[in-house]
Amino acid sequence: MEYVSSVNVEKKRIAVWDNLKFILIFLVVFGHFMSPFTADSLDLERMYLFIYIFHMPAFIFVNGLFSKRAVREKDYKKVFEFIVLYLFIKVIIYTSAIFVGGSNDFEFSLISEKFIPWYALCLAEFYLITILLQDVDKKYLFLFSVFLACISGYDKDLGSFLSLSRTIVFYPFFYLGYCLDANKLYDTVNKMKYKLRAIAFFIVIGIMVYFFIEYFDDLIRFLNGCFPYDEIKIVGKCGALYRLIYYPIVFVSIFSLIAICPNKESIITLWGKRTLNVYALHYILRTFVDRLYNEGYSMSDVFGFGYWWIVPVSLFITIFFSLSFWVKPMNFILRPKWRK
Image (cartoon, rainbow, N blue to C red; front, side, top):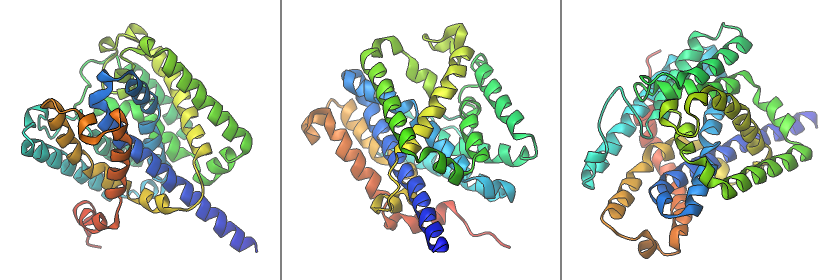
């Protein structure tokens, strides 16, 4: 009986992380399709800001949580795979932009990145840094990474070169995930009192974003992680203090998200195992939306439902690129066979 029970618990824990990954990748797609229209709708701007507080840090944290084996075994193949993913996304985005006549919006550069490929490049750098520094005291390295992230915003030269600014700003999330045990973390937050606190936390954040959106002008640039403090009105010279406050708030939001994430296996559990495919391919369709928007087409007229068309379209795209059809071709591109 003990053995069966432990297996069932393990399945639930696996389901939690894959369910969470599906929710997060949906929010990524939703955010990307929403972004062109935030200037036209205050409600979209509110949702956009709310999502950006936690969705990428949470994704990076989960990656760190399950990076232990690759780091321990010094699996540099992981680094290579994410570099291939980075280049693949750059090529397909640039190609799709040319195809729809919008290539002027995408400057192709192998070593500089502001658009969505930054995430793949940062993951490659996260794995490489963690593999190289795995013998350093964990508490020391975590605190140092937070310190470095807080002061990095004063350097105007970091920017998008190798996505270094984002690598530094988001590395504490990856490294904390690397340091924590997934099972113990889930055991801790999977209690009713923490679930209720998590719901209350998100309600408070939602209320603040809803009623005080005008005071959060330019906060997206701060959450973006690639702008120096001088280019963010809301923080200015006090950027390091804002960044120091930012980390505990986002860490709490990540743990809260884990606490309220469903732990039952379902179809989204399977889809959650294929989030890299969605991340790599979804922006192709976003370039077509950009083309329609730039030519003056009303998305509300095309899809209906006002701006709410973004929700079902984003969900459909997330599910579509999560289908098994994409697994083999994406594995062929991103996971080459290695000689033993």
